[in-house]
Image (cartoon, rainbow, N blue to C red):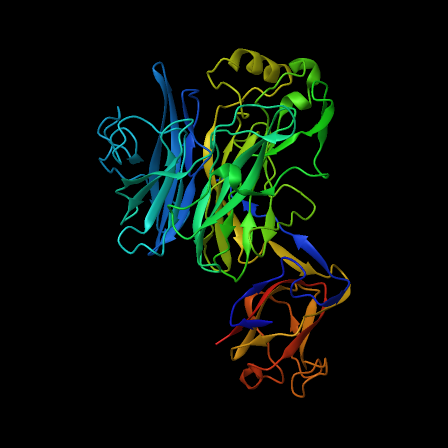
Length: 509
């Protein structure tokens, strides 16, 4: 296996040929509690759940949706906030939305901005940088109406957007039929597109519905050589759907068990700091009628809390969910994120050894106070089970996480070891991302393709790694870090460790 000089993460067993006392441990980010963008007290104005963060040319650009509920309809639009440190954001006065009631605003799509006179189809967007378009590298994916396709906007500076394509993603309109069939439905989710250099194609992750005793949301994947050639969503491969680990609910009319959980949003990112690593932060939506059957009388109820979970993949097709624990836990009842969370798309560099992620949290449960024909019934049900909003808050907050820190190969408080498969590399030094804390230590041996220690790189030659918490710890043998004599040769790495978390390794040039 030739890894060249690419950084490699221990998200699975790809680099673990054999092991002893090693387990893969998922780590959670640190909540900062900061309310970077906030709307509260007004049931008529909310921040949407479909938002993106871009770090480009030293500037953090946060693209977020707002929804305004008025007597003549619902208006969704996209705003921009910027930052130089990823912590303190400003809302620039752009003067692009001349039809908005507040002339001093940061709207980039809607109310005149981006050529949109009114609002969009839902309160949010997805923004990505297209490496194949040098003139307009910023692409913004959004809908014009509830049952309209996903359209595309473009921009050269990430501020001034113009309409580019009417239809990038769409789904067929099938009539409802009996049995376990796919039902065509609108693309109400944050649907993701990015260019994947690994396969040299554009990749999309979208909402795709099943009709199995009620609507079930799943995640499908498609790929295309251009932004004009994605197939219909109905023809895309489902890569994530409820499985045997998810709770089920018996539906009498269908005479079968159906999932309680929907996979609402996907927030798939190609991890920017390592090779062949994809991460997903799906919104796990727990439909409340399937828990509280006595209130809903077995009728569909589109309401319930939303958790953020975590999964990884090497190819974006096969996903590992580990123990299916929440990546971010809901806040306490008085906190802004008590009932719902939606990850902001994007992973950006932070200060020092950290990276930043963002999410929208709310104490308004999904389906509460939507203003449609279900509102009276569903609000009453949620009020009866004590799920009334406390503060009516929607806000975007920052998360802090160690670089590469999603998953570690961990020994716990014991001795353990890892032997990699045969590798080939290019580089002069071996770096590791490791945390030994105070009581842990590690040594690394380099072996030949026959699993024999190479003189000068044995366990006894390796200088002890201890009292170390470093994302780029340089490994030395007899005070030398030079491994250039071994590059392009077939080698095996052997990690001998006690009470360590090993996140990644890399041969650097």
